[in-house]
Structures are given as structure tokens and as C-alpha cells.
Length: 263
Image (tube, rainbow, N blue to C red; front, side):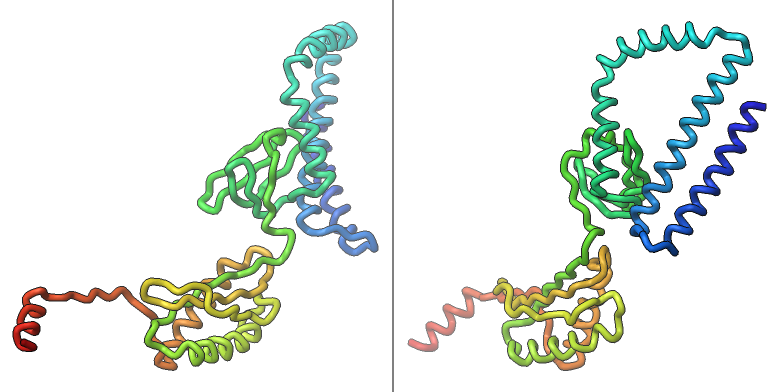
């Protein structure tokens, strides 16, 4: 009965917690969706730990086991174990500050401790980061020393466009600029008008021009691919050539014949 009641309490508690956050969205004091998901999982985990602990104590009492003596012995053992559990304490404290300072939340795309991916869970001891290829990395909070969060502010899509040296650069800039004015109306991910910065580099066989566009968080990769496709199609329509590798071959035999003719 204790186990059944514990499972029932946890199930009802999860429903109440979900309802609480749903009502919070309609209240005057709203929080972001990413922070809501983080706090929701954290509160549910804390509720489960408390209920399981209380159920364990009640089961021991039902089995007529002396709880007072057991807790006293556990206190002494816990004191001895505490000296060797410094990493655990560090993880818990670090987890508290991660949540309190809102360094990152569930759904954010971050890079930390050599790991890059989407945050799936933030707990008091560990956090789970899922890479875009599917791997889930479990990191102790104490190891999260430096975090790069890509989801807190708008992203910037950067695209380098290459044009052949034989083409008119000013005409190519006019064609690209006219195209960029059309993109915000066709793609809602683009927040501001994309900007052509000008000639970025002079390569071995091409002139490189850079285009930037402010987009919604984490949309810069998709928008960059779209801009590349649109620029390629428009340059083809205008007859502006995109460079490709060329090889020029000189024949020493032909050079000798030309010198003989000149003489």
C-alpha cells in the first residue's frame, strides 16, 4: 500500500505541477518557456526523491525496524562519507547556481566541456546534453566551468559569395543587394534586412563577398543554406559566373617554335 500510494502521489504531483506552470503562463508574472521546462523537470525530480525517501522510512517502520538507531548510524556514516563526497557537493552547488542564474535551460543549444548540443535536462547534480547526431552526454555540474549559449539571443547567418575575376563586381553587388531586399518577405526566420558587407577577400581565382543576416536563435545554419541557394540561382539568371578551378598548361615545345619563328 505504501508503494502504491507513493506512485499515486507522484503521479498526482506531476499533474499539479504541470497545471501550475500552465496557469503561470496566463498570470502577470510570466517566465520564458525554456526556463519553465527546466524548473518543471527539476520540481518533478525533487518531488520524486522526497516521496521515495519518505516511503522508504515508512516501509522500515512497518517492518518494525528501529528507525532512530538506523538514522543515528547513518548520521555517523554520512559524516565519514561526506569528507570523500566533495565532488558530489560541488556538483550540487554548481547545479544550484546554473539554475538560479539561468545560465542555460532545457532546449538551449550550448557548448561546454568539449560537448556541443541541445540541453535535455538540468538537474542538481548532472545535466544532459544531446548532440545533433543523437549522442547524449551526461556532465557533472561541477565540470561545467565555461558555457557558450547559442539560444539566448538572435543569431547571425554569414555567407561568403564567390564571383569570378572576369565579372563586373559592381554589377554583381547590385544583383545580390536587390535579391537580399526580397528575402525577409519570403522567409520569416530573417529578422532584419540582410546586408552585403562588400568584398571580403581576394582569392586565387575568385572575389569573395560577404553577406550577413540577423535571424531567430539557432536559425543561422538553415538561413545560410537558403541564402546560398537564392544567390546561386539569381547569379545564374543574370549570367554572372561563379568561379571554378582552372588549369592553364604551357608547352615548352610550342615556346621554342615561337622563338624560332620570331628570329
